[in-house]
Image (cartoon, rainbow, N blue to C red):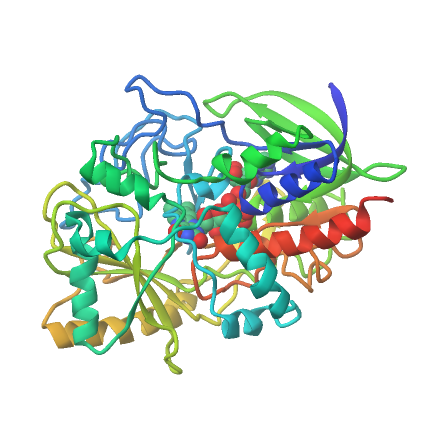
Length: 498
Ligand code: FDA
């Protein structure tokens, strides 16, 4: 077993991990990032790095033999998913007993597969969920810093109002307005200048060619183009891909020893490696970080991991639903508008108007609603099966379904429209069994101190979405990024010299 020794290791390459690597690299700390997924820069046989949603191939999903798309059926028919070769593809769906979680795999984590919606949460709600965090500092310094570094931009209204590709969003806006609801534009990291050129100047189409959940070949400022490029540019950061961290244990004399599995592209473990570091940053996401810590506690490697680890998980109140409405066959994959009824005291809902790009008229108006669901789940680690489990029952999604239903019943009533029941299985109008926004598991101020230092452990930090207590009331990556910036600023100032 080969052994490497580095000053700092960051596990993962998603938002929290990328912030940590950049700020450590800038501070002169030699840092290695370990990512279980691949670097997405090699074109496949079709000349493209990523495949499209309509023609998924092995690049689409992480070690599966059939795709598991969020909309499983159309007109109740199993025509959406396709058999694929098992491969280290870019999108994973982790299926727990009564909740499934979509996550990105590869250099850039979730930024490779997400819709790019870059929302700074409403201040009052941010203060409600993370009351111990100085909101003044967040809103004056760290949210602006995250927005700048992530390259967040807004769709020009002149483009939005005239593009055929946003007809679907304008129709949903009209229906929401008729029912007395407000809509708001949603900023994004997809370059809207590029998108306009896709439509009008012959630039290679990406958002306008059905690319998103299996990756965008153009246009999107995913982390490999922003934070990670900057981190590598410091000269102090390197990334090892297809490297999955399996075990974390303390070393005598301080620091940590990691067992890392090197994978091939069919998921076989080629070999195991030991790596040592002084400082360890966990940025493997809500699921990944929590799993590593619970496994370490259960197998005795880190017996003092607190009982708070595993708690406080939530799906950010995610509920998907759809109505029967003609929305057009040309649809951009990048959502830019949301129905904003978050001010509703009984049932706050922020519902993004989602596209359904199928290349034909499907009569689907699709929405991803973010609701304020107070229910929380708990992760556990099943040692015998070497598996993370999640205590979350279907009934815990009911408050979120009720909130979304409250809003969309009113929209349907005002427009004499109905729900679609053919898209989510079991004749359901509301998809209540998956989330794009896993949050919590190592909640700030409970499992960690106020800055992500794991309680009871020196030099061990949590830096990703697991810090956020289950809900943020908006799409989460801007908050994950800004919170990581805030925590890293403190850690760099206080912890690097000893
Ligand atoms: P993130 O999940 O990004 O990264 C974790 C990384 O760690 C992954 O690359 C993973 O492979 C790696 N890893 C895990 N375990 C490991 C191990 N043991 N060893 C090595 N590596 C390991 N959000 C938003 O704000 N706007 C949006 O529009 C969307 N849309 C959206 C669509 C889809 C389809 C998905 C799946 C998600 C979104 N999201 C979103 C959510 C957003 O992408 C998500 O909140 C963030 O990516 C979470 O960032 P983290 O830093 O927590 O981890």
